[in-house]
Image 1: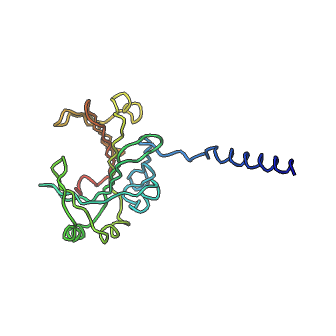
Image 2: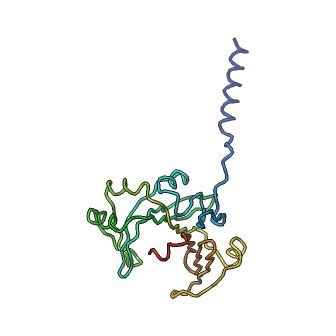
Length: 207
């Protein structure tokens, strides 16, 4: 009996030890891992811009986002899904997805929106009701904004993304690194967070 109890205890300890060993996780896609697809658009974070839906993006990212409509004077309204905290391959940050939604549908959603909140940028963010959120689940992702918690510098950007086609100053003292062949613009600033913006080949003309 004593030997049986000892054997049972050893078995339990062995099982517990195996449970504590972390399983091998599939490598997460990184911001610089960009693939140009057959339609000319890119895939990044396992999201094929212009093809992947909001539903599929959430499944791929393993996290649920929040949606809203942003309006600003002299600009077309945009529908966005945002993730305030997301971890991608050990890099934490904020992620925003722009969704393709018809203008008539946006106007209908605005008429039923719960409230508008003024943003630091001067835009107004409208909180959407459950009906609007359900309607957006199969909307296509057409642009991604990624804001890593770690500030990038010029050396890091050049190493990971290569030579930019153009580097220009923006109105707030930052620099804009443009990679038009892969639909990417990176904004760097000495005292502000870095911003990476990925977009479809026709996103600029649409907004």
